[in-house]
Image 1: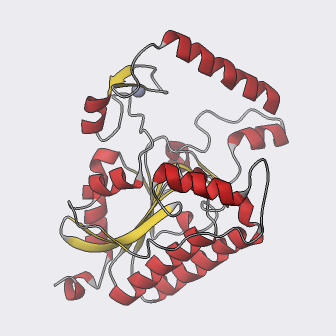
Image 2 (image 1 turned 90 degrees about the vertical axis):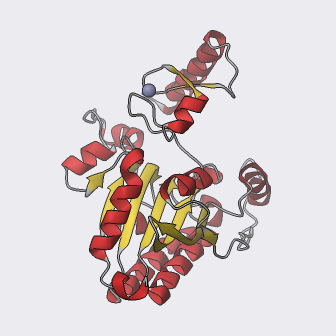
Image 3 (image 1 turned 45 degrees about the vertical axis):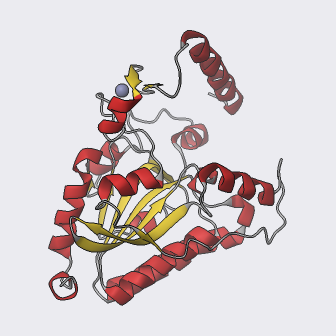
Length: 289
Ligand SMILES: [Zn+2]
């Protein structure tokens, strides 16, 4: 399928859905996997997971509330903001795109970092926000990840990063690509002091994030059905002109091929993480007292 066909197909799909679905969007949601219409309150109670196991994308705030102890999150460095140092412009300037993303998400960039408690155990966390410019990694995301790694090196508490990203932020050119090397180097320093790092790959984790910190966990976990790749399946299919196997680049496929250690349902994530950090962290008994 060519890229133009794909755009046309998506356009058709949207109009089709809109004409058939005359339901208030704030009460009901349609599952893109099984097509069932779901009552939003029920869906929220089920941690935004459909009965068919489709994991809806969620905001960093929702993720923090689901996986960490109530009210325990303390954000670090919320003030760091990106600047348009290249004066980059495509159909819109980067400056305007940043402004719109900030207004939409109420975040300064595509990640929140800080400390939190996980079943009473202190941890360092980073949670990416896909709705902020596709969770793209620019200089701010790279810097914040590096700072939370350095925080973990100092306080010796485990590090957990939830990734959800379309890759590098093209508006920052080479500076965004440099973040791959920067975050990877910082993680090596964390490994040198034997502090565990658990990477949780959520839908989607692609491009420069999957090619750096997201795949460098001591344990790499994914949510079910997450798209995890460097180049997307459509690009590969068009390049090699071959049909890819079913489920290619989804969590379960990657687990089977040995690219991931675990696929964990959102409902079980908190307990799995707390059991892992206790098992992995030799410093816990000493520092958590
Ligand atoms: Zn469903």
